[in-house]
Every structure is written in C-alpha cells, then in structure tokens.
Length: 288
Image (cartoon, rainbow, N blue to C red; front, top):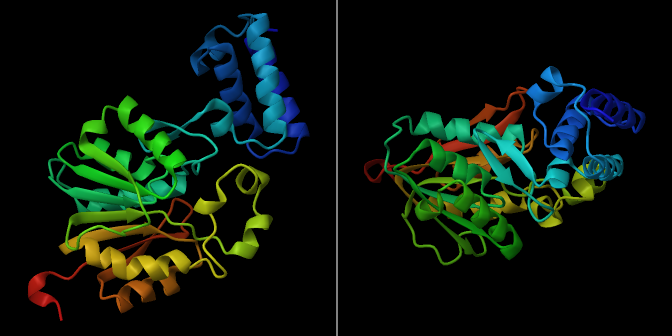
C-alpha cells in the first residue's frame, strides 16, 4: 500500500462509518501512521508503507470507526499556535476556546506586559500556555482538581519551554488563593447540563472526562460559584474571560454583574455563537 492508496482507503472507510470530516481525519491518521507529512502525500504519493505502518494505520482507523477522537488516537492536538499532548483525562482543546485567548490578547495588547494569570480548571493547559506563549513576561498559575489532568498540563508546559513561568497545582477552584492576586483570570468550566451529556456525540460523552463537562442541572453550577470568587482573586482593575455555552450569555452575564463585575460583555466564537464572557474588577477608586 502506498500513501495515496492509504489516504483514499482511509477516507472511504471513515465515510462509510458516517463520520464527520473524514477527509481531514483520514489525512491526519495516514500522516501519523506512515511518518509522513501532507507534502509527502502530494509530492511522493507512491511511497510504500512498511508492514508496521500499515498495521498502525489499521489500528488507528479501527479506533476512529469506534468514535475515539483523532486527538486521543494521536495523543496530540493543535491549539492557537501551540501543539498540546492530550489524553482521555482532559478535554480536547477546541477552536471555539481560542476565542478566550483572542479576548486576552485584546485586553492585554502589550506583548511585554508583566501580567499574572490564573487558569481555573486548567486541564491540558491549553488556555494558560497559549497566553504565556504570546506574553513572554507573563507568569501563570493553573489549578485543577484532577491530578491526572495536571500531569498532562505539566508535560505540555515542559515541552513548550514554559514550565519556568507557570505553576500547576491541585485545588478546588479558588480555594486557598489570596484575594487581589491576579491581573487576569481565565476559565473554561464544565457547562453542559447533566441531562444533555448523553445526547452529545460519542467522541465527547464516551471519551472525555465527565468532570470537565457536567455543569449541573442547568449547566450553570460552576458559574454561580466562580463569579464572586473570580472577582475576589482579581486585582482591582484586573480582567477575566470565561467560556460559556452558546445559550448561556444572559445568565452568566447576570451572575458576574451581581458579583460586582464591571464592563461585562460577551464575544462570539468563529461560528458567531456567544462563547466568552469578559469583564473586570472595578478599580479601587470606583468600587462601591
């Protein structure tokens, strides 16, 4: 089997399985299995796979047919401008979440800004590490209740050369953190209503950690706890950016306003769906 045959056959198998995005998935799996690049497939399409590479591709395709995410099959996922290691202990970073990083870049446009960043529910480290990669004078703290997730984040921080600028600690949200400590707080909390989880795609409900998905009966449990706590740990004038579900803007904005936040607004993702609630802690001179 050569590269073009492998790609064509992989596409056909994934199409037959009814998977969305079979062309991209097939290419990624063939590239990984055959130790090839996209350029190799175009410029050297008749390069033959070894027996070991064919066996690896067969394993990858079988797993994908059973709806295991490509990111977990390959153990990596691109996010923003960085590549992250991932597994079934963390959410697979999604393009929608890059909207959180966009919001941070706008709020802190100075690339040399010496900001302190807190990422609550850090998971793979996607948001925190993307921000640190763009703001080389920044330092960060990532908190997660899952030690398994923190192990993934530590690995990612190390291979991106960012471990010296971030600490990763096991904890329950902001518990134990001092007030007025951070210039920026980011968070992608669980926000799926419990009853809705079983309606999600198999890639999500079977392979991603329930702890990172389940937001309680209405999906808002984490925000009720986090809104006042995020305001507590922010420095006066500090800013926050939290991811939300597409239909949660009104409720989440109201929670942050009730907690005393200023400049509360929502920005869309690439699909123009409500995705990130942003705001600030009032400066000392204007606080009630």
